[in-house]
Length: 236
Length: 299
Image 1 (tube, rainbow over the protein chains, first blue to last red):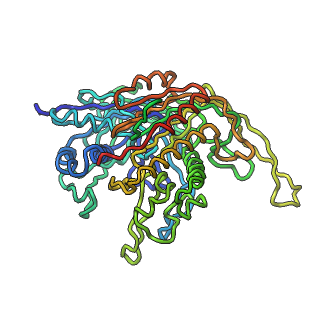
Image 2 (cartoon, each protein chain N blue to C red):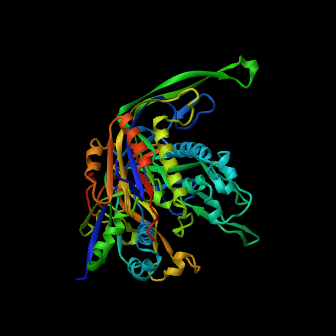
Image 3 (cartoon, rainbow over the protein chains, first blue to last red):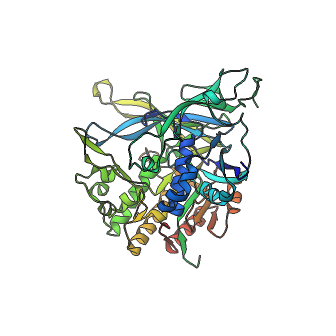
């Protein structure tokens, strides 16, 4: 642990963003309030390939990224609206045809914070990788890295798998939950990641968020922050 | 702008003011009411929105006209404005053949993998779009809409001929963000291998993309412009160019001082241009067309 440090990275989402929930159809998609750990790992690998090339990424960055603990702190207030969109959908012959779809889009002026436990001697390399990430979810869900600093995550402020969540007296009442994917850290290999070998290296689990739904409309929801460790019902 | 600027990536954060438009709508209630698109913001206010899809379609259309005029190769699908692009072609081609088309190269395409009887008969091929548009969001305190009653010819002529329907006419200042990755021109974005090695061809496409972007913003278009062509009454914002591999940052135009904050991001690898009027924007984009060139990705 002496050689490791928690790197915290804040992302500003300039306009709307849309990170689809796992197991949701792209043609009727609900979204997550912030990207999950798999999205973060894949984005870091994508940027590593862009900045340092495939060989360097495979040899030096992937082995660290594969097991690095990643935590995510969602924004403190989020507005989510459902939009009708015209889309293309493959038909039974795998030819694209027009259809109407639904997709949620989120807006927040608060930052999304990603925490990664990394080797101290690689902090500048990881800073460069995090700085290069330009979107979360869909490619038009723009993100700009605004701050990189050393900070340990607060357990009450980050998302957790349900069985690891620090939920106390309040239980799950009104807590926002969703399916989220994480890599199967024990079994993932580079070949599986690039598609050269078959095998599913994702685990989908229920996660709890330090958020609750404060407004619910037919086509829109508003989520607000509440620490998972707080025992009171008050909104912070 | 004296020296030529290498462009890896370019971003625009804009505040544009459109009056009396219906450029993007969320759907209708049968045949008598057309609803505007709306987005809930994190402070609980609901504001007007325009989908980024519509801006992307319009950019592709303008780019097609420019490339056609320049006698650049366009595939048969792009030539008729089919937004499926390479997917609409009947024959399977190589990536080099797909990227001969300037629209497929710029706006990307997706050809899904095809299986018959469990066997792959066509491999999936794709290229990421090099230009992305955010949703345009109205500044909540600088936006209004007014329902307008229109008439149109009824399909059932026996019922009197005219049919009344309502359509919202919207006005306001909108925040819009655009990102253009020049380094991806002529490159297979999945393998990151340069496919087009003719610098002049890439430069021609780069200029056409920037010119289309400029014209798109100076002459807005979208849905229902045949009866509600928007009045453009203002544009201000910032252009950030990343001259090396990495991201050109984008700050939200909904932030009151986004121009000042964005200007502070200038450094040795980021060139920043601010503009506060149509004329300065036009001049800046024209100079960029003349004095910038796309670089290749490092790997």
